[in-house]
Amino acid sequence: KTVRGKPAVAFGKDGCLVAWQEGWCGYRGDSRIYALRVGLDGKPLDAKPVELAPSKAGVQENPRVAFFGGTFLVVWQDMRNGKDCDVMGARVSAEGKILDAQPIAIAVAPRTQAMPDVAADEKGFMVVWHGFQGEETVPKISARRVGADGAAGEAVVVPTSAGGGNVIHGASPRIAWNGKDFLLVYSTAPWAQLKSWMRMDAAGKPLSKPVS
Image (spheres, one colour):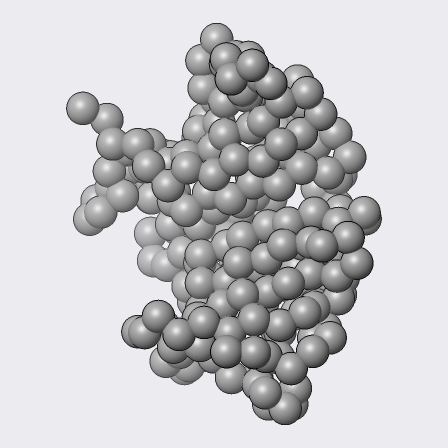
């Protein structure tokens, strides 16, 4: 049987978009990201799911989804390069049409960039993830804006230290918009279940000290 898991969902104009990973995601895996629209009555609006970013190799996993301006944005981690994970995205219209012939490259640094999340404010999407740079042995959290047109802004590393100065590690971020600013929640130790959170503005700048 086909393995399906890691579902994500967001409400849009007249229904929801459900995204998930399908296929084996372990060693030599071939999991891919699929999506299906669901109506307000809970019934599927599409005859069958759509594969968002077909690829001949690599594993795609951990999808997340948000809605803005008539468009859904699905983000996920992608290992099509065969070496490490990148963060990719694809837009889906409210009518269920994939708007990007090739996935949006949100984070494709030389080392692993993974565990993305996405939220929408009144200007577009904010994508966050954790990643490694240089010879680092612990990840840091980064953020990048993506517009409804698919254009990506500049990626920034989010300072997560209590003093707001030197950047310290953070992992597995989650983000939500409250109508005024973002709330960023993250693990402060990748090997432990310790969580911190902080308010963040639309440019990825902290608005408060982390709380644990």
